View 1 (cartoon, rainbow, N blue to C red):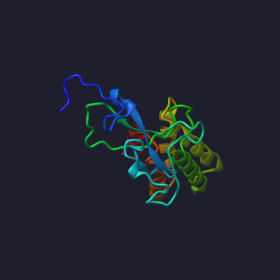
View 2: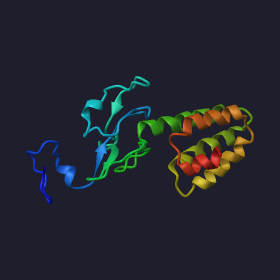
View 3: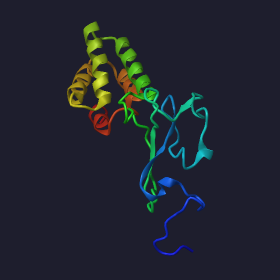
View 4: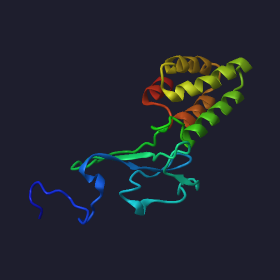
Length: 180
């Protein structure tokens, strides 16, 4: 048993230099956005080269700047129970969209161009709104309002398809606004 005030040393079992302060682990995510391991450093035995859900390759760093994808946040002496990890949409270092966010935006824009009942101008407007809906910035309210207005012109099947594509990459506020 260790005495009170004991500081871990490098020769201690399970020691990592980061244990004395809070730190982000690295996350391993497939290019489609499926979480493989949100504790890539702490539990390397859970790592996989390919996703067991879709077969795509897995990544641990931003493809733009090579910064690690943030995983679980470790706080010494605190156990996180019931924590559900959601991969971030954008790199915290360079701001580039991760592959799963890019793929969702691209798919939603392609779907916008296929919507019958909209003029080509409306299809383009819908496509442009998707970027702002996903970014969750100052123009998001305008973009969601525009999306809902245009959604009255297409069927619920198309609306469901947009939801299926975007639900994992938009904020909770956008989800509640678009799909109550």
